[in-house]
Image (cartoon, rainbow, N blue to C red; front, side):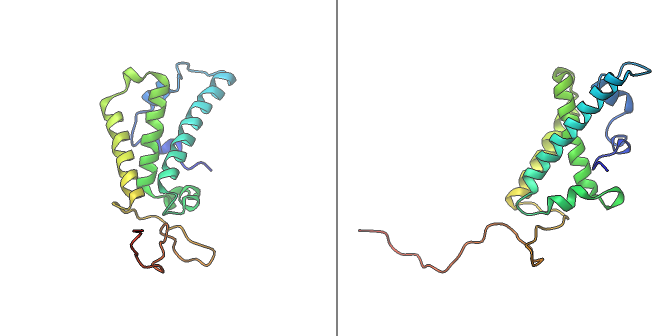
Length: 152
């Protein structure tokens, strides 16, 4: 099952706008048009998922996050992923026709992801763990060595 469902889009965009972005101008689509539509949507969604994963990978278990389905999904991650996917659909269709709110929401999503990636922000997501189940929070630095002067 896909991480983002058709029902998820109703929160952020009207069906008519989504159809226009996917170039769905026909009442009855041919099989070729339907495949192209699904490919555009799938590509935008996969690009968005990869984008979000790249920001979260260091601290959070992205496999758990994006394998969740239904109500088990984190609503905020669903929204951010959809904001990114819709932005990618707009840039592929007609960037000049992109509403300011869509560009702003994408910018907000990326800004939040950057904050979380750098540790300045937090998220209620499953942490990355090692084989023992211990949380991995990033690179650990050893304090085994003391600071010494490097003057010669």
